Image: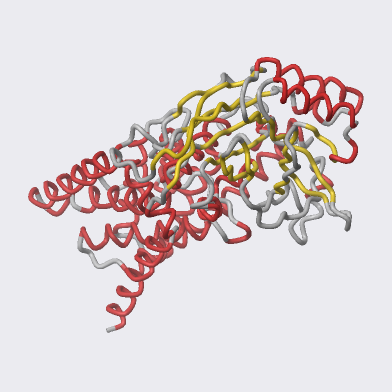
Length: 491
């Protein structure tokens, strides 16, 4: 590539990060992530540590700002923040999240050796560690990890049951860097890099044919209900009866042994729900063949409020309360009380639930997770091997008709691959879906429609390699690579 003027390169990298969003749903141009990351690798190749950090910051800011643009709907339309202030908030959040790609660039520039293969492995390691760190630091926000772009039919999806989403990020970053670093090293080196890339794709395609888990028991009928209640109606007390009626209306087409209503489908405390309404819901579910799960707020004896999933219509009530809360949406981090003076977010003072056990429904052990809890793969596999199905209830009405819905569905597909379990999703506005253990979508309801998705699913048992080991292999490998380079550099 021809030299680029230094003041243009940060802008180019910002745009490359922004274009990387096309690799994710709903665009699904999975392999576009390779040239997008490859451009960053090219910029890092000869950069000083400070420059490499700047380039990582620019690339990451572009990716997060465009990829999470759906936050504008929540902050402006439903949170009441002015457009300019909401855009500034998203920009600051994007730049904050991009500090980890910046740190990855700094480490790469400090430790690189100038050998194309070794430097490609180094980039894979620093990138994987940066994304893994983002999954837990400050409670974690691993949205848009590059591995999420590699859902089927990408051949790299076959690696997900082995190494998880951060292992996929390791592979994608290493592949992108190898193709760039090998190019100026001569024809034979270029052929070696291309051959290695094709080999990785071929192995991934073969791995994708392996069934790591097996069906268990009889098929069960599930009905996943999509209520399609507008977010501005959901918290309007004068229209609360309309919201309650929407649940009963959406149940009309449901037929299943397990019927599921979405997150906070009853936007109030369970103790405030009229008893005759709860009885009507339970009766409607029993008439349609089974019992159900619904989202509602609960309160304990100490007055703490929880975002919960509660069973209804069965012999005994089971409760799961959300454990991984959303900062600024479900609780206020220290020193950020000022944020709630600008954004009006209902039920934003919630408490963290305790570790739950899978629900016992229709002979299945159903592992519950609520909304963006399914972004945290290691937290979901904690329910294995006991759980035979996974169930997510969400309310993405906060983000309108945006990319949040297909991106969240794509994340759930990776979770199904990692765990080797079907993932059921019941959402307020979309994407309500049944996902097979191989990450493919069995069925999905159109967004912004009211109704029920009726399907048959089978529980699965067994453990994928990722379910057994979690993120430890890729994290340890990446740390060993960095440690080895640090030691040899000092010598």
